[in-house]
Length: 306
Image (cartoon, rainbow, N blue to C red; front, side, top):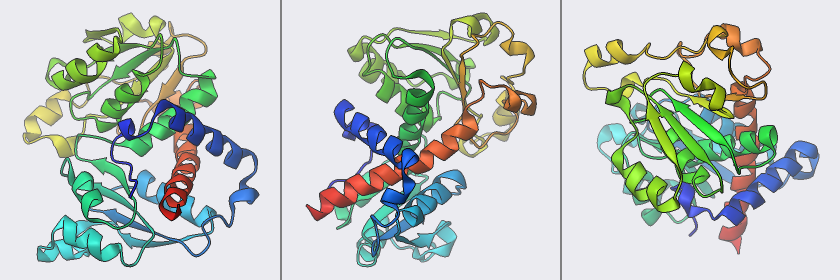
């Protein structure tokens, strides 16, 4: 049974096909309004979510399907001690496809080995978030016309930021992509991202502590929040949470066609004054996330049926 656990599960060709379907959905949504009639998506969210969960639900409804599930571990039998394996084997009896978010790295992979329907990883701890990456890729494709020869600035929490890890993994497969990684020393990108992804791909990257000196180089600026829920020490979170705050003033040397992205939720790392800047694309990302998830649901259900 085909599942999506890691963005590497999709080939470059398959990503291109998903983007093409998403573009077609945007152009002609009525054509897809009944594609999943009679099908059910289960959203198993063991960790809080607004955009990802509602995006999956909206995607399935707009395909003509139905949604079941829960939005908190406390609202499931996990609170009684049920294992992830037993939960997904049970839910597989009720649904045709499952979107799952879990605070523990690797939980969706375990689930995919026990479920009898496709599993979509909707985020596992600080590890992966492949459908956010697909939303990011659709945004980049629509804003930049493709993926090659781009300089991407990644700013904020690069250690625990699963969206950053997945985006680096995806974009390192395209030619001419350069990464500028901006973070406090304590929140640098993990070493395995460099040794297992960037170095083998031959993707050039630099690491720095300040955003403004590199701003003029960037085609894309991907801001992230410092994630309180990933810290064991509250004092460390408070010390680091306001390290980078993007303001209009800091954009004065940026390219006029810079694409500013953020996986959201935003806390205060992007000033609300930036929202009206035509370069701000983070709310477009939200909308594109729905369309690319529609395309992914269609792909996995069609492959399961085949």
